[in-house]
Image 1 (cartoon, rainbow, N blue to C red):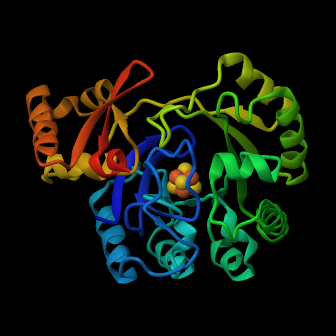
Image 2 (cartoon, helix red, strand yellow):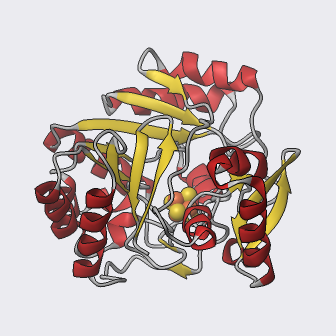
Length: 313
Ligand code: SF4
């Protein structure tokens, strides 16, 4: 499936996800990535899946879901969506299929290319990431493909801000002991303000990360980041809400579709799927575990369900 959800999102309400990638395709290999280490480490844009099939699934999902069930249609998935060569075509196709706003969640690295920026312009919201104020930290946190440079990322973000009339929200993932010192937050704050984003969203690795040594910063560090980044900064707290599954669809497949993109705490999963009954959800999870498709993993004192491929990375 190339379409999943809607899944609850603090920033985007109920978000219908579009994922035109194969697991896990990225030009970064972030230490905090919830999908595990990068499998397909590439900067080559291509159509990883047939674009017509993606649009067919989006149209079917929009038909199935009633008014008010979706707030945003969001390009996000098992890697970096800007690597999809026909992304511009897909965004335009989705815009002509629905009046719902379209969001793109990206690491931003390919916005250094003029044609990629042009493809993303029709989106209503673009959410790139900027975690590091210097090249050394950029390499330590995001572990970008060797051909990528922090200067190009920054230049691309500046160009995009000039060209783009929609909402630009920049996300910063804070990792304890890596990018949360006062000194670094001050430098990053200057960079962020120079980009004039509509919002700066501070996130923390709340889901099992690619590297087990990754730690969440404490509240004090988040407050320090809020101070350093200025009045447009906000902290994105974890959000609990309903997880939708296709009516009459296979529950295990639907759960797998979601945890492939976002590992979910076990208690949240049971709560969100309470309508299916505890036993049915437990049976679906047991089946996924038995088939080697999903695994339980403890992180920060909670049990998460994650897809087995992410764990094997
Ligand atoms: S967090 Fe995003 S940009 Fe970083 S490796 Fe994972 S998919 Fe790629």
